[in-house]
Length: 475
Image (spheres, rainbow, N blue to C red):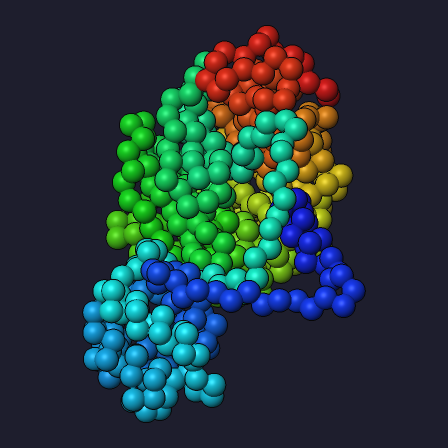
């Protein structure tokens, strides 16, 4: 997986030695004029309170992991009285006016207690969603100045997720904080759906094609799914949950439920009508990156950084068994139409085939598919072809019946992240790290159309404009 240049620069600067004889100076910080629930109160709660007052631990019946839980209080009643610090039981416990003084062990500093007092006095308001899990940001004790490096070439956000509408009239591309809808026949940009918290990790049209779900969220804060009406592009609802951002999303076959998986190691099953989770599936030992709901509705498969594929009974919320074999993170999963075969790809560069049912499953084939991380896969709707994409800059088409390679489209401009077949199985949309979005003809691998062309490429066009004459891709 890629190393971001911002993290690398920060690490280099932190590692730089101090000049001889110089001692680090701790910068004195003025007290904030406005107290932020997310930045200030959230950080204190996350680092000093959640060991005893998470949603799981909930000592005294009090959970502090979200704003709504904080306001709800515990077994002794509400702990916050907005605008009245002295009357708030939480403030009394923090100052020792009520016993036992909290947090147990080392009390909060006078500065942090003052922050709680000022926040409550100002009305105890939240600057994040009421059900978003806390992950407050620490106040920096020193300021690190990172040099501004001017880009030598323009950049586009990566195409991290793709979905093709069931009627074939829309290709949806998940980017940074927005989804773009294209007409695949003309390349015209139809709509831009904005307001997302961060990068879109997963896009899925509902079975009837009337709703587009876009999943993501903020790292270390919480997951988010926005549901958009299709084709008018109106926001229907936003669902929040998980303690970290959501990597993947799957609709149930009837569209009444959906499943999500996150960096927080959890798989959740939700009711679409209420937008609320109804089951938490806990068995992964690490982040969960892949989900697939079987067409018959009887199985849900999940895969993650623990290198395992878990097969669940989604109705009972029960794990049926675990499939082991991948040597690295499982990144994508797909069931066949009969619901008896599961396909997977991952960071170990392999494409694997498994037979599955409610009793057991086993691996029947493993193929070294790519020279780099295999990031995603999609099965053609007719079941006769399967596509995989990779960081090695290639898309490969496979015969799912025997695992044989059909065609390689390689030497593309950058690593690839997302892939989606058209409903008629004749075309394949592919998105990359460099922001490129192309449609290929499945029969010969030629480029049908470029929906987004990286600006550094000679002759680049604007989004939505007709592309230049298609060129044949390498076989």
